[in-house]
Image 1 (cartoon, helix red, strand yellow):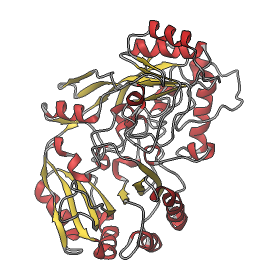
Image 2: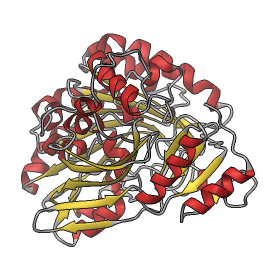
Image 3: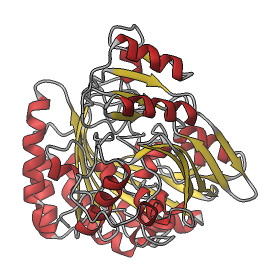
Image 4: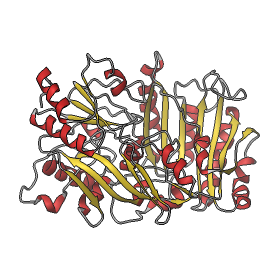
Length: 482
């Protein structure tokens, strides 16, 4: 596909849409294409800020007529690989948001962040299945499966989607539900996507009361004891409880609380929905595992979920790597401590072991493409992508993954996969069967590979006797949509 747009071409796009159009020479271009992950610098030929689904349709038709690739971004939290050339459609102005408190459902536009949903839902005593930060976009997070704070109780966010509205490569705007276009409904829930652009989504909400959550901080010298207790503790946790353990090498910055600033600490993240006395009792084995520096656990309002993991709330340059574990046995624990334990110098800011299982292990509504169902844990690493650390991070990531190979499931969770290095790696979040179904849909709906950025699958030769209506009739998130 060519990726050059002439001045008359750009003028034609401006006449076709209501949202703003930018070229690299325009003052607003850099802000329009900027991602939350500052280490990723997108360089499309043209950027467009869509106001609604009609804008998206018009822009896709314009790109298709010129043979241009199309990418999409809302917040850019998942911008692990740079976009080069083509048309980048920004959906961050698509801020439709409504809640039906009787049916306990929400409808969001492609630019809505979880924070807006959480705040509005809380006025009705409800909550959405957001993850460790409410700053991310709802749509892109959910298309990748969406790993919620309360995932062990309710499952992945994608399990509870009611409908998607998307625009496909031909510019057609369509609605997809379990009963309408069921194959596509399957592909969108966890498949991230390369078949179109999601413009809106509807999903179920859940009770947002009786939350007990927060974190315990331990001095890093106690990492072996805390990790050992964690491995013994998590098998006994009920579905209502979620937990993870993070090894943090915190910078000496004012945003970090004074007791933790510039230190190596171990952070237990914990959430429970139900009786506070039960939540407290369940936590006791971890409280006794070692002396703790800070205790931030207790009753929590649903609007305070960000306080559990305390992810950055300002754009930062990061490099990430994630994969899935089948077990946390002696070999895995030894490997983790070799790379992240006391006395180790590491460029990795955070390494986290997150408990999966519970309701995450089985789809709540038929088939989907979530690639983390069978894993016991998610393992995720992140570091600041600044010199000289940015050169060291891939080496450390590779070494850690190799040392944890025996405990690894071999798969990854697409939202936590991180930077991909080649075509095989970008498809790794899905197994062979899912990849084949994604490829068939791609060949039917996007045969010219218009949506070719991000975690996408290739375009194999397929049986052309397969009818379009038998495969899919609409598409998903072209790149990140988050």
